[in-house]
Length: 131
Image 1 (tube, one colour):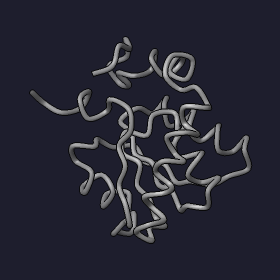
Image 2 (cartoon, one colour):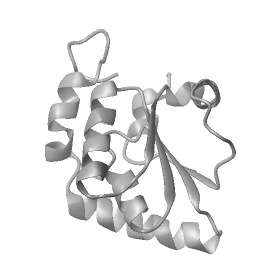
Image 3 (tube, one colour):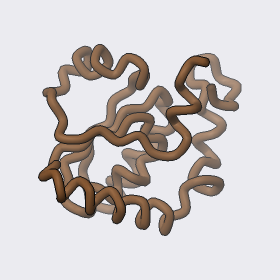
């Protein structure tokens, strides 16, 4: 898991520095341009971003007109994601939950299913997949 000290939010410390380390705006932008080509090809509109972190991809997807839902295990990461989108005047819905229990997390949050596409960017799969 993350490198934070809080038992409540194991990614609390990481969230403070996440964008400085991993989240360069041009990286989010270029990765989302790649996603946009694929999503448009398949007519996807409603997107779920698993392990969305601080919402960099959610922000770019929302800028491109997608209906975005982000899911992350870290309250602190989600707070930063909400701040980003709010500052940009964009909307996305964010939920606290584990990507390994995505269906129950979304059902508990009363999120309508299905989604047109699910993305999981960065190294989140390696971070959250049990060995």
